[in-house]
Structures are given as structure tokens and as C-alpha cells.
Length: 409
Image 1 (tube, rainbow, N blue to C red):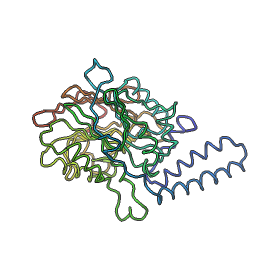
Image 2: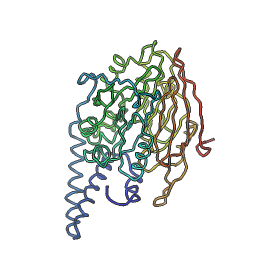
Image 3: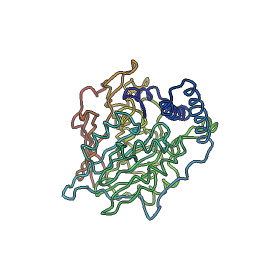
Image 4: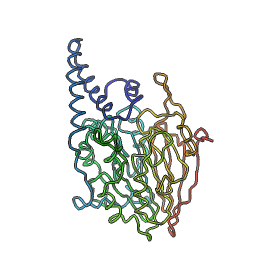
């Protein structure tokens, strides 16, 4: 992406969530790169119409009315999508996982966060969705697969979920370019990620990445009458039921769900349908879960609660991976949902206050799961832990440390 760090960040200010706007931004990037090669005003105007308007119209219409990439599900290529958690250091029992969402933006901030992740050298890294602007092959390359891309690949695995932005290009680059670059080590064998969901597990914990992205984008006209609800497709539900066996009452391991779209939100839309489907699979057992998502470009710890007919969840929003971080107030009447919210101001651009980017470092130590929320300066702004009771699957939660600025009451 051309321009200074501040110029790149400005491109994402006031970025909406409509497909048309993000396609326009992608074409603007192409236009700017080509105009850099010209010095004539006439040429610049010509290039604008050639690259920006015509390209935008074609890219947008092809996406809106073209075919979506076929859905990929397990079993596929002799892969079940369940991978045993393993340390990349044989003598080390604990396992570390870096979680990032809304990171793939090719900004100075996303590079800084990725470099910080590399310093911590986690066993696994997970990108929880949204490649900006619309998940094109070039955007996948610049963020993940090019030799100069800053994404850190964990020695034990690197996995990805889809957000809505990947589906703005019908998911083609996500399935054809990104997933083939993602993997999980199973012993000495590297297994390539085959679908947009997965399960990492050991004797104490199951970390289940669910796909809410594929069903997050509708078709013209129909989405007005029936807005997308991010539901889990039947193939994914069958996998959760028959392969993961999510409803097994004898499986009392702690459960962590990862998704792109929010189960709870105090700022914009929230999606209850995936939670309802997961609770139906879990059955009558009132098992608490940890649920971590992105989509909202901020760091928020929600209070322990359930949404609609979904599970009781410790909800965490970590959509502050690479985009300008929002620090504005919660919607009217919604503040009660929040326990902690990082509203610290890191810088201002065009009179707009922006917060701190960052990621979550998860550490598994037998029955204990520790979550460290680190900003791009490597400050641990919050640390919390859960201990699973293997008798009944209940979770004991503790806030180990939190900056006073994060408290909302």
C-alpha cells in the first residue's frame, strides 16, 4: 500500500462496511499505484477512469452477481479439521497461541503488531478474519504470503477464519490463496487447513474456530428483505455434531469459540443465530464458554452473559489488530454489557482519536487458560485466567491484572 504510515491509516478512517465502498477502496489502491508512474495530468485522469471507475464497476458487479466460491467442509483430503495441540519445543509443556482479528490491513500498525507477535514466538497464530479491503489475491499476498509479508507463522500451526471482507470477493482468494498457506502440525506432519473452521484440542481445552464469514454477505435486493445472520452452514453444524461431538455430555474440557462476528456488541449489530445453533448442539447442559471475536475495531471485555438462546459466555472483542482503533462510547443504553474497554488514545489523525492496536496471547497450562491482552507497545493492558473443572466443565474466572483506564464503572 503506497504512502506514509499516516496516509495509510487515513484510508481506513470512516471506512464503512458496505461491499461497494470497500470495492471502491481496492480500485483506488490500484489507481494510486499506476498514477505514481505518470506525471501528466491528462494521463492521471485517463488512468483514473481506466483503473478506478471501470475496474471498480467490473469488480463490484462480478462480486455481487457472480458465483460464490464453493463451500469447503470436512472431511476433505483425509482431514477431519481436529488437530491436537502441541508445543513447538518438546521440553515445554505449556502451549501459546496468538489471536489477531481485523489485522490484515498492510498498515504500519499491523506490521508492528505482527513483529511483536514474532518476538513472543507463539506455537500457533490465528487470524480471525477480515482482509482489507475486499480480500483480493493481492491483499492476501501483501499481508500473508509474499516474502515481505509480516504475518507470523507459528511453528506448530497458523490458521485462519473468514470475515465479511473476504466474502466481498466471493471468498475466492480466501479459499484458493490463504487456506493453502495455513496449516497445523500433527506430530511431524504438516496438515494444510482445508476449510474455514477448525478445532485445536488437548486433554483440558478445545479451541473451536467457527465460520461466520461465509454467510455474512447476502445478495442484492434479497439482503434488504432478509439481512445476513452469519448462521453456521449445515456442513459446519454436522461437523460440530458428528466429528467434534460438541454435545457429548462426558466431554468436560473447557470450550473456547473463535469467530469473526460478535455474539454480543454494545456498538453495532450483534449476531445471535450462531450462538443459538451452538447451544442447540451443546444440549441442556449449561456449560459456560469463552467466546472471542473481532469485527468491531476495538478491545472490549464483555460481562459474563448469554445473548438470546445462546450459551453463557465470557465474550471478548479483539478487532484491534491493524485498523484504526475506535475508542468512542457505547451505544445508548448498552454500557451495562461491558466490564472493561480500552479507550486510551494513542494518536489523533484528522481530529479523530485513535486507540491502541494489539493482539491476545493465550497460554495453556493444563487446566488453566491465561489470556494476555497486549498492545503494540507490548504493554499487557489486561490479564485474566480461567480454570476448567474437569468434573463438570465449569469455569473459574479471575482477573489477574488490568490497567485502571480500562474500567468503565
